[in-house]
Length: 132
Image (cartoon, rainbow, N blue to C red; front, side, top):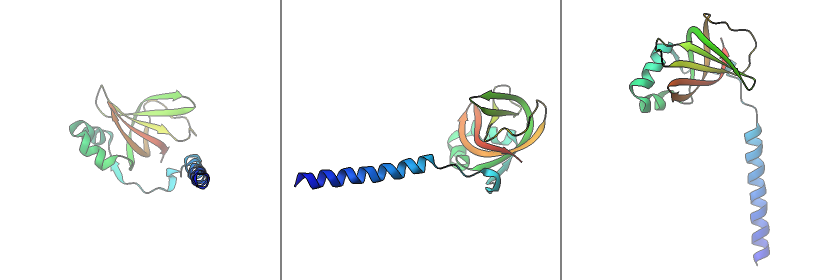
């Protein structure tokens, strides 16, 4: 009586593990063709989080956001490029982690990016970003 239950449980665990693994390893869809949920300036996006982080999280978290602004810093880490856009705040910026670093972006450039908002930790972070 116990052996069939053990074998069935093991089989179910393997099936669930297989689907979890294949889902986790699937490549993310590029944002190039993803519709934009919000178009904001760096100042508007940062202000929304500074004024009411909980409401901003409900509105912007996991949404595709387009932001245009001036590059104040670029950073390379673990093969990923992060672009910092000026939000007229000496303590905070809007940070885009680029999906791919295809072209050189320089300090002072005016650029338009879109990415998925992951939240606020003194800076607003957007990941899987692409230059538009």
